[in-house]
Length: 70
Image (cartoon, rainbow, N blue to C red):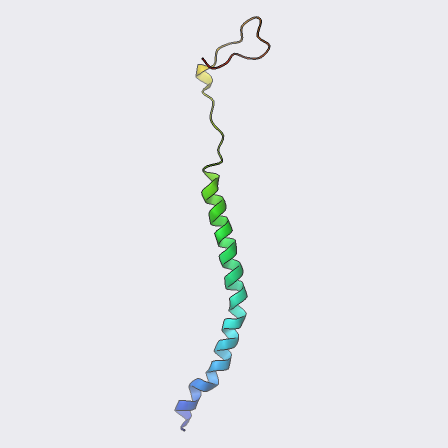
């Protein structure tokens, strides 16, 4: 064997260590980004119904609370 054919075999351990070190960060990052994406997607659906204040009627003399929607 010549030196050029042995060289890739010497680099294999360093690449495998790099992938083993990067795997936990990749997994945790993917889970975190997924949770952020789900939270942002759900934020649009959680809004309360708006009340049209222009349609509210003033309270009548006998009503304890404000008027209602007609």
